[in-house]
Each structure stands twice: as structure tokens, then as C-alpha cells.
Image (cartoon, rainbow, N blue to C red; front, side, top):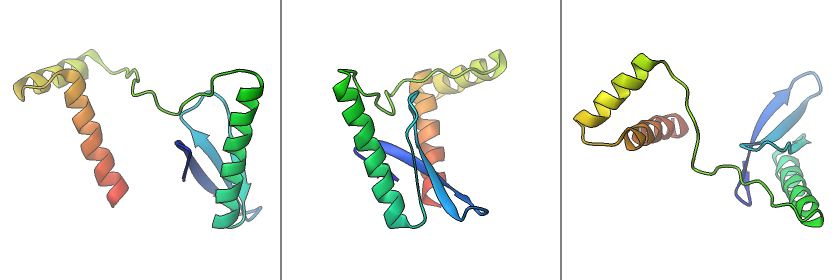
Length: 111
């Protein structure tokens, strides 16, 4: 789910027969819930709007879900293999990893 640039993921609680959602990519916690898609969409919008209003009242800059930067930890062996593979195809390691993520996420999100 997406609202004002914020993305939510949803899980179903079989026992409660209720969907629970959370906005991802933030240190702050924004949650929402509902029994139907319409309820979920409204609850997410209400929760994000509440968060933005709360930040404005406190003169706090709201977090944005994704800055475009992230740190990855891996073994030195994988790091060196990735750097060599990137060099062989004429890309920086950053561009190589970006392309690999793009290819994989495109495949996952379109299947």
C-alpha cells in the first residue's frame, strides 16, 4: 500500500480476523488496521496524516521512508567477488549492486 510516499505492508491475524499494517522504512512507528481493503486504505491514510500533523505541531521534520542510501554488511569474500564482477562489466560496485537489486525486485514484484 502507498500513501503520500509512505509504504505499508499488511499481515492478516486469522484469530482476530483483522488485517494489521505498518509503514515501512522509518524509525518512527506508524501502524494501522482494518477488516476490509477500504478500511485499511482509510486507516493507513489517517495514520500517516496523524503522523505528519504530529510532526508539524512539534516542528519536527517527518521521516521520509527511503533516502536512497543504505549500508550493507557482507563477508570480505562476497565483497571482493562483487567488486571484481562489477569491474569486469565496467560498473562501479554501487551501480552493480543497484542493478542487481533492480533486476531482482522487478522479478519479485512482477511475478
